[in-house]
Amino acid sequence: MGIETEYGIVEPGRPGANPMLLSSHVVAAYAAAVAGGQPGEGRRARWDYEDEDPLADARGFRLDRASAHPSLLTDDPARPAPPGPDADLSATDVDRPGVEPYDDPGAATSILTNGARLYVDHAHPEFSTPEVTNPRDAVLWDRAGEQVMLRAVRALAQNPAMPDVVLYKNNVDGKGASYGMHENYLVDRQVPFVDLVALLTPFLVTRQVFTGAGRVGRGPTGQGAGFQLSQRADYIEAEVGLETTLRRPIVNTRDEPHADRDRWRRLHVIIGDATSLEVATFLRVGTTSLVLWLAEHAGRHPEAVQSLVDLRLADPVSAVQQVSRDLTLAEPLDLADGRRLTALEIQQAYLEAVGAALGADIDVASREVLDRWDSVLARLAVDPTSCAREVEWVAKLRVLEGMRRRDDLRWDHPRLAAMDIQWSDVRPERGIYQRLRAAGAVELLVDDQDVARAVVEPPEDTRAYFRGTVVARFGSAVRAASWDSVVLDVPELPTLRRVPLRDPWRGSRAHVGALLEQCPDAATLAARLGVG
Amino acid sequence: MAGQDQRQHRREDEDPHDLPEPAPAAPAAQGRDAEVDSLLEEIDEVLESNAESFVRGFVQKGGQ
Image (tube, rainbow over all chains, first blue to last red; front, side, top):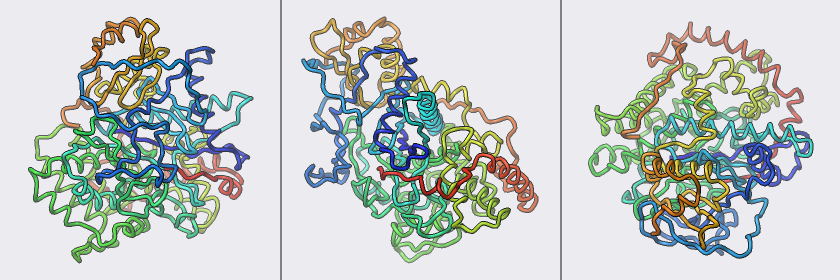
């Protein structure tokens, strides 16, 4: 699994500043900061677009490029993803181009030593975590992303020739724009996509009760006064679809696995909010991956799956907004079969079905997710304020209600809207969440030392280990990289060597740690990789 | 997740509110209100002084 986060970006005092340019400054500033400001650190690795295919639809067809919204063409320059054998770690020879390709500064990308990607997505800097195998690690590398963004902000502030930039880990500007936090989950290709949609939809609609980051304002442009659970809810307009920038769906069908497409799909979940509270992030990815586990094991647990599919909502899209606006968590939703259940009751049904299917003999990570899910649902039902240290919308609402009470503010007062925006400012001295954190008002799951390490080191148990370690040790020989490839450029060889990483579980430390340790330089590595 | 080693480092000074059993509502709410009051003072120090122009200036382009 992994989390992509587009950060909100502002140049203080200049609302008209070009956000694409500012975002590329962020990416470049971080790259320069980690290079220690040394000139000629070597050319930067490019993104290898070879296997990208953003127009492939999980329902089994491809959107014609000509009829796609330009914002969906994320793989330019694009070539169709070639079928290839899922070889053991080996390389293929690729001709070395005679002329250096032009680098579009707006397409700035950095592949970091922790295996993450830092780049400009549309008009926002985006941090995509390396691939991780469990929700605690997702929290850890998500936190590492906050630290990367903070370091870029600091580097720009110290450089008088560069504009100051402030970054926000949120999803709306309150004026009509929304930008995403996307979760990615590796799912067995054998699960039919229609089954996945049926099982996931009621879950995704109702998980807002503990995943919502909270938002001041209602409606896409914030035209209504008030508070709602989710940043993203008012921008969800379809049940299922390919688009991510318009007509956003509950279940996104982009079928770009970044892996062997015969074995896996990458479920791209775009409905969620970016969260700063660690428990909120942990629960979001932890519960979702357990529901996906059930989808993959549906054959062994048909009754459990059927009981959840039967929770089909009468109108899922309007239910997204209904759940987000119901601060009492008590309003029932209409089900397709005529029943009426609250979001908490639907979540409880998922918890029980997943828990029963997993049984008693389960791994520690799954147990931790189940226990926390159970505890939070139980307390939300009795007294939501008891979750103020874990659930972001509750934490935010608690402070907002305090301001309202003390200063007698109505919901349309700009101080409340300002607090909502400033909540996710990544700077410890300015961010409201950061102040709560420093005051011990939120529960933490990961240590600062572990986060500092995750800023530079990759997870050890996925292919991110190979990608990050190669970038760290042989960075100047990495000509390009992507989620499922690394292209080495070694002067001793007549061609480039492209290493496909089509199995996300291979390239881990257990798999390639010894090999990498035995290679003093990139030329040795390139020579030792078999040619596939 | 299956089979992965999990690091278990909870904070030592875990708040009793974190425990699964819901605390009695009234006293817990009072304790939290005191915490909110001190948080509000801290927020006053950092919140943008001209909230209205700060909010107006926060304009983003849509993303994914």
